[in-house]
Length: 182
Image (cartoon, rainbow, N blue to C red; front, side):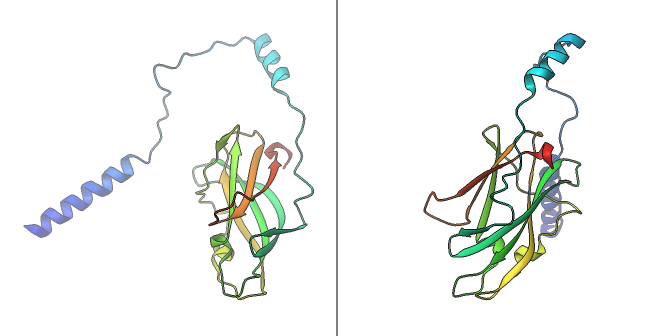
C-alpha cells in the first residue's frame, strides 16, 4: 500500500511540475486589442527606428581580464532554442590563470539585459555546445570555443555584463550587442 501511495504521489508531483511549464497561446482577456491602420503602422515604424548599435568592436578578439582569469570573446551569433525562441550565442576562449583547476562556466558570468530587464540564460539548442565551458582545465591552460547563450525577448539591443561568477565586488565589463546587426 505504501508503495502504491508513493508512486501515485510521485506521478502527481511530476504532472504538477510539467503543467506549469507550458505557455498559453491565448492572450489574457484584460489586454485591450489595438486596431492599427496602415498610416499609424508606418508612423510607428519610423518612430521606432533607432540608430544602429553595432557589436562593440573593442570586445571581440581582445583579451579581457575577469577575476584571476583572462578570456577573449571570439564572436556573437543568433540561434534558436528548442522552443523556437531567438537566442544570442556568445563564443569565447578562456585561460585559467589561477593556481588550481577550474571550469570556465563556474568562473565567469554573462548577464544580459534588454530594456532594463534581465534575459533568461537557460538555453537548450542544437546550435549550442555548453560542454567546453564545463570542462575543468589546469592552471595556465587555454580552452577555446566555450559557448553560452541568453534568450532574447525581442531584437532590441542587449546590454551584457561580464563578471566573476561568484564575487563580492561590483566590477564587471559592460558592452552592448545589437542582435539585428548579427
